[in-house]
Image (cartoon, rainbow, N blue to C red; front, side, top):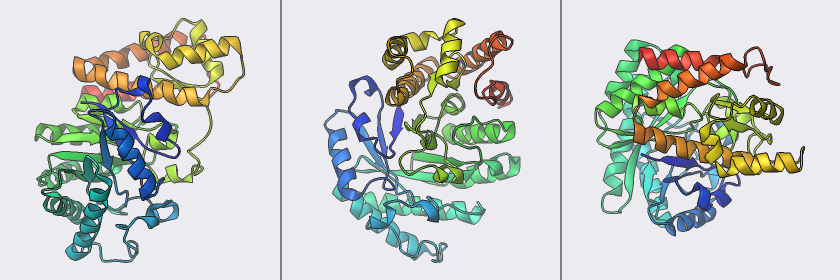
Length: 378
């Protein structure tokens, strides 16, 4: 039960930072790096005992934004035109993927899955089949197979579709499931559709209850919801476009999804710009978690000594430290801690409702009530 670093552009320097060592490992990105770079990242991870390297082939990345994927030996040149229901097509990809990962010497390999326009029963049957092929191909290599499940959140809002999807995914013999939730909420906004949230949580609950270890990719502060539902691990990245998977995330600059510093505050379960951070600090609403966060301490010291100076790099680290520490805390304390955290956050928002107007109008804490509902009605 640990957090994973979702690798993105120029994230290598974070892999070995001592204060971020509580991450279990990294989910590697062939979109952002070529094979030589990823091999170097794997070697660095192996220098730290217990650190894992998961390779996600990321075939579900849209046509318009495949980055360095085409340079990888396993990437199928006919991915947009092939008959993706063909078992032979998937076998060829799995074989090439396994050969590549043997060279890299990674800890685990996520099965290939494409991004579908329609998440039909046939689609889920196909990706489960690819996972089964991966199990056979990795036998004897020492690498662990992981079943990738790319799921549309809008489908999970419909009870009968949710149950059908859970039933098909439960056919996999792979004990680890890497869940990629596809939604329409942009990376800088919190999830607010209660039925989609509940459906996603229910899927995690069903799979976990069936004995699978579920790792949820592309998580943000909604990690708390997935952990409450029973997720074993969650993954996040330093950039906002690595904290939610949606087609819109690829509209972000290739250099990393926006260069704005944001502070994550557990007391409000919200991301704050500098001006709002100052207001919240003056109101005495910084959490106990914040006082233990070494990067938070550095940011506040810098703001006091040199107001206006950039703290973008520190903001990434401040958030990542919180994510790993909070994930570990929830894992240790159990799911019951999450409703308590949400209740506390809503009370804090009510406290500042008449005293602070956030610079970002949409930053009003309204998602907390939806999250509390989802937990209560799960």
